Length: 362
Image (cartoon, rainbow, N blue to C red; front, side, top):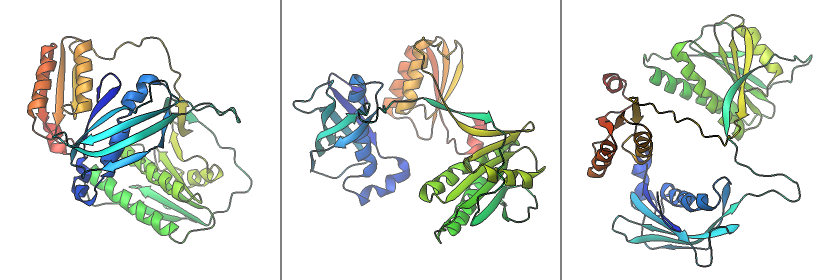
């Protein structure tokens, strides 16, 4: 983003993961969404701490198809200004030659304010994940389940009275095993839900807290998504230090179906949740250290350069190692030279961070 006086210029790039879909659209969703997101550069100027939601769009003129790289020019519509409760913006999408391909007029966002009828207010919250020790209050009567399935990630345990699956893979790499287990769990959940159960279906995925096995806790996202699609689906991801008394732990968590992330550690039961971070107006100490060495993956990209320049400006001398998958462009080489002119030792290394051997070599 380049922010000027009452206007914003944003460079938009089609993500590589959907690059092959460019020809399927006249207005590519990724680029159109990015163009609207660019308006944040103006909205933050007038209401930096308030959330805003898209509200209306008066007119769209389509003059050409989106290219893989676009520029979005955002400015206030005629008659609109900073401070208006509903701010109207005009957005032009241009190709690299400056030709206007799409013109959006009267795009507006509405600042969320207190609801006068209910007294409820809309605020921006900062949250961070935490674990709370929580013992169970067992009920005398368990809520009936239509289906109950347990999936064990590389754990060998015999559990009776429930359908139990052991997730296994012949792959040695953790990334391939993770992918395999995600597919296996997805297919099992899909099978459970295709008949649209009228009663509650409980799926418990059990993973070990030992070493790299902790990575399998990412399967919790799959369970949460399934619950959003079908409220009768209940998912629990349970972390254990060992296989002792797993059957009883699975049963006791049936008494607390609202807990979707549970960890057994040091003989205690912990439940994952969120807690609010209280914003402080005190100036925080900067985290960067003189002579520090900082590795920035994707460091030659736009966001990486913002961090790199911030570090180089705050502390001297400092060592910056920037990585990326592509060769440097002339513009990126110029930006690295700017970092060096600020007194930083900046180096770029071409590395694919999803390639284990390349990362180890780095």
